[in-house]
Amino acid sequence: MPLTIEIVTPERKVHTSEADSIVLPTASGQVDILPGHIPLTTVLEPGEIIVTNGGVSEKLVVDKGFVRVLGDAVSILTEAAINEEQIDLDLVAEAEQRAKSRLEAVRTHKEIDPAELEKMEQILRFAAVQRLIKRPGDHRR
Image (cartoon, rainbow, N blue to C red; front, side, top):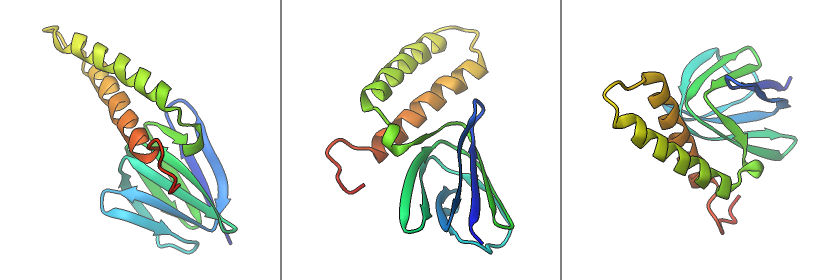
């Protein structure tokens, strides 16, 4: 029986599929989940997820979050996720620059909104992960 994969962000459901396996970046290191895996709840680290079905792999980039494996269901809750093929490095650079500017403005005020500060830091973290995963001229992927 295949795994059922679901990846959800605060904004939307990003990915739903069946798979033979999924490789996840966790706080304990990279974890490969196969059907019949023991129940698991763990912290998801920013990085690359590889979903394999029928010998075909799909790669997604995720931010921090949580993973729950229960039966053959893998549920991933993350701050952000994108299919590697959809990454546009020019848009990543623009978002990163806007976040850096806003972060600098936020830090110069005596009254810092912790939620806004966390959001800008999340944008910068996710931009960095996307750049690392999809490097220009990197033909390994």
